[in-house]
Amino acid sequence: MELVDRLLKGDKRAAARLISSVENEDERAAEVLRELYKYTGNTHIIGITGPPGVGKSSLVDRLTRAFRKKGKKVGIVAIDPTSRFTGGAILGDRIRMTELATDEGVFMRSMGTRGHHGGIAKATTEATMVLDAMGMDLVIVETVGAGQSQSEIWECVHTSILVEMPGMGDEIQALKAGILEIGDIFVVNKGDLAGVDQLVKELENVAEYKAMEQKWKPPVHVTIATEDKGTDEVVSSIEDHLGYLKESGEYQKREEERTRGEFTRIVQALLLKKAFAGEKSEKFDQLLKEIIEKKTDPFTAAEKLLEE
Ligand SMILES: Nc1nc2c(ncn2[C@@H]2O[C@H](COP(=O)(O)OP(=O)(O)OP(=O)(O)O)[C@@H](O)[C@H]2O)c(=O)[nH]1
Ligand SMILES: [Mg+2]
Image 1 (cartoon, rainbow, N blue to C red):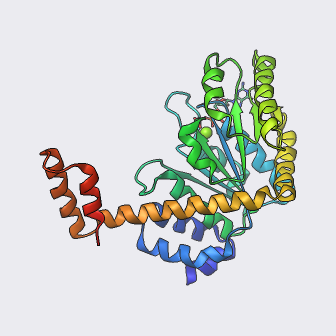
Image 2 (cartoon, rainbow, N blue to C red):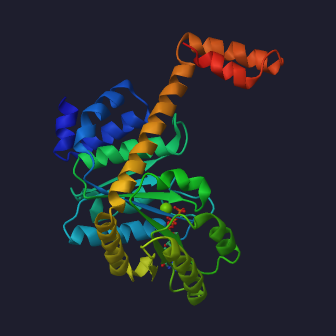
Image 3 (cartoon, protein in one colour):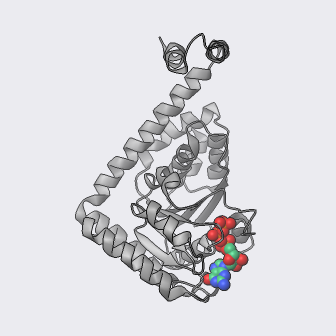
């Protein structure tokens, strides 16, 4: 397949086209992904999350430049990257405006959160596969939010980075409840603002707590993304974490988890698609009517829909 050949050579336009077909759930996309799968598994997948406006995109931009200096190729997937509330710039715009746009070793893609059978995690997984197959050494996935709602995303990455900023008050309380299981690296960005020490202390407590359950103790870094301060320390921790994963055997375990998640999501999406395909969609409507009229219940109806 011509598109596949081009992609395997690292052609960014082929990658863009492929990810679009993935997003549109184009038949051809599935076919291409089948072809590509055997070329995946060589990339270090990094997730970056945190509340709106903390500086995730600014940090991704800095990290990307730092990795480029080391000769690494970087793919970026930004999910729902703008917040109407923070006025955070679209990562794509930021990158388009810089020399990274014409850099053959950088590929950036934004993805919406809606309209995917099987959810954003499935679309992310598939976009990551494309970037992996095209030869990116690292893929960075940016998502908004911290906590359990995003936990699906955590199954998709090897290294997760939680970004916070000082002066968020109650935020840290809400955070503690949700993030204990995520975050291999903690970053306090906007280190130029007041309240850094307090937040660092809180996160170090969380890190201590996590270190009781696992061998990896999440480092806590302070950065000022707008001034490129602290970037190299974060880069070092990312590399250290990959080293830790590989030495401890944790890498293999995460790969298995990732693959399990991947497979599960693909099965779910396929079932969903089948549930709505062709005459099923009529049957769906008919069953829906019966449920509304209390002639049947949704549990029985769901089984009926998926029979045969
Ligand atoms: N003072 C200060 N401002 C920063 C720093 N890093 C980023 N900003 C600013 O914070 C705002 C939001 O930055 P983004 O990088 O877009 O933040 P984000 O977390 O990606 O935002 P969303 O994707 O909308 O959630 C921008 O105006 C940045 O210039 C920093 O270290 N210090
Ligand atoms: Mg952003």
